[in-house]
Each structure stands twice: as structure tokens, then as C-alpha cells.
Length: 180
Image 1: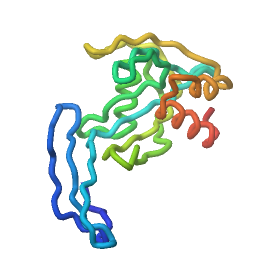
Image 2 (image 1 turned 120 degrees about the horizontal axis):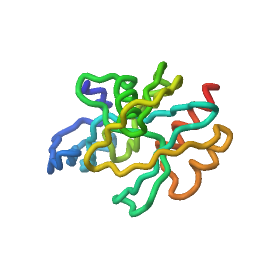
Image 3 (image 1 turned 90 degrees about the vertical axis):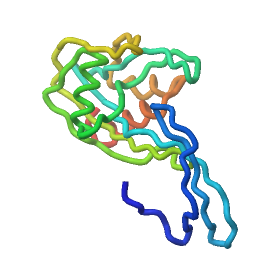
Image 4 (image 1 turned 135 degrees about the vertical axis):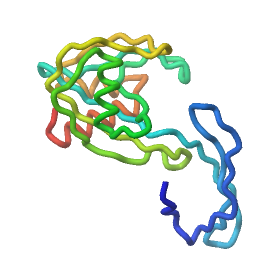
């Protein structure tokens, strides 16, 4: 990762305090513009992809339990971008693994930083269309039901509790781009 940090905030120390296999957590000790020093804590996660997949004027969603919040969630398919993958390649893989669909066309809609106050994490939103059934390949920790909703209902559904930032972002960006 390129160091694009503002040099008016010099980093005196950057320390990873723990590694979970899923993410790294640590802090940067910085000199603030007023000359004081402060530790800013962060968690670093691999990039992730979120897939807005549409077939027959319906958005494909996955229904799964999220132990981190203790809630059953209706979400867009998503997952980690593996080493060497682009967002569209990861999107194609995650779509097939989680939903059992392959797409004839995938396009990157947006790439951005998430939760910049605490995370070092990038997310890409991918749009997929021309879906056809293929073999589903769930990971061992995925217990997912696939469903779909009419495009016109997708945003309202995404905003219902437990709302998910990635699902809301994906649907809003796809709507803004005129894709749904």
C-alpha cells in the first residue's frame, strides 16, 4: 500500500498489536498539527467486493446469520478479494459461490475506503447481469439462503433493520448509475 498520509501528521510509530488471521489491529502514534502526540487505533482488513446482481428485474440477495451483530441479515452477495483478483473477478467468484449464478457481464461501479475513522479497508461495488445457474460452492462457514426482490423494492428492503451498509451502498450506487 502506498503511503499517501498527510505529512502534516507525521507517524512516529506504527504498531500492529494483534493478528487474527482475518484482520490486523494496531495503532499509529502521530504528531498532530498542534504538536501534540496521539495514538490512532485501526483495524486492517483485506479488500472486499459487493455484488449487485440483477435477473428478470429482480435483485439477487443472500439471507444469512451474522454472529458479530446477532442478527439474520438480507444482503447483497459479498466477500473478500483474494490475492491477484480484480473486483470483477472476485465478484464473479463470490456470486457463484454464494448464489449459484454466473454472470455474462460484470462491471466495477465504484471502489472506496470504508469506515475511515477506524478501518483500513477498501470495498468495490460490482454490477452483474446476464445470470445463468451454475453449481453453488459455499465456504464451510456459509449457511446462506438465496432470494430475490423486485428492483423497485430493493432500496426499501435494504433500509430495513438490520440494515447493512454494503447493501445500501451497492443499491444506491447502482440506482445512481441507472443500472437498476
